[in-house]
Picture 1 (cartoon, rainbow, N blue to C red):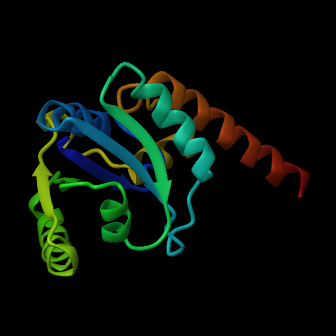
Picture 2: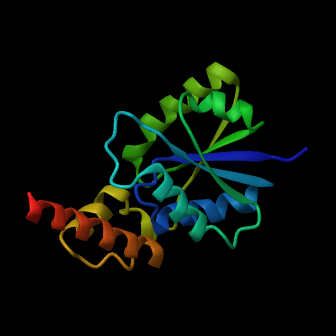
Length: 167
């Protein structure tokens, strides 16, 4: 029986920190499904399709990683995929309280294990919000994201600037 893990997130955009967690998870599980959450509470910069495209490109060299999206309860998705674990990255102690609460709730609902992975320390400060903000001001994000993500960020913010000029 394959040990399948789900790594959910909004990945708006995927960062080198996310990729580090994916790499670590891919060594622990037979299959890792990186899944883009369709979170109605957030207003993402990129569409679900754009995020999937970016993620597929950056994980293409991982033989045991696939990319998907889901809507609804994560535990329902995990059951549908026969997953044994949910992967969550922890950057700082401040992440832990929320993630711990969610892990306990998910376990109560469907008895699934949450595995917390800590990215390399060079990524502990990194998150998608910071990357988007730097990119929105034309800053260099090349140390924080893969080339395809950097390119798509530049294109997206160029489109936004052009739309504002036309308005």
